[in-house]
Image (cartoon, rainbow, N blue to C red; front, side, top):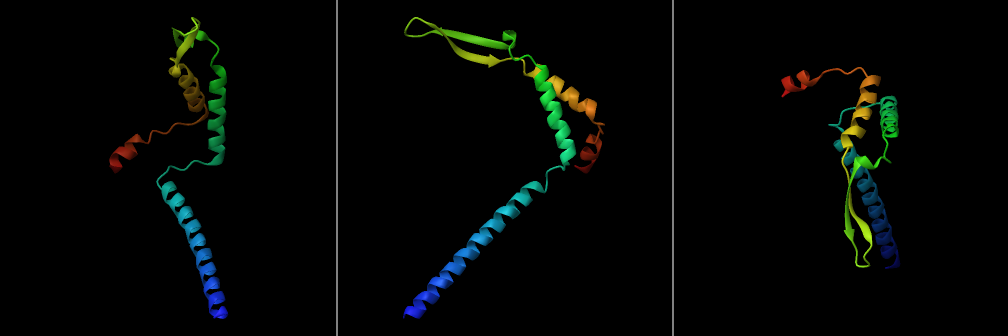
Length: 118
């Protein structure tokens, strides 16, 4: 009886290990499936894009209060408080980033290829 219990425990342990292994493989394959339709981008190109984003953000003056809309309120103690802040110049952040990217890459118009494939 003791031998059959040990045999069953070993079998259960082996099956649990196999399930864990298959679960890990399934997660890996799901990730590969998600990535299959994504356009490819090599690391050196990605590094250039990161640099462009960094430079574009550094060019923008986030401390300029004209870039924000403020809504104020009076709280229960009679103090004026900022109720809501809205950043209203996202285009001014986006434009230098796009310009840095366009200046560093040769842009190939592949929209005709995509339209003809559909």
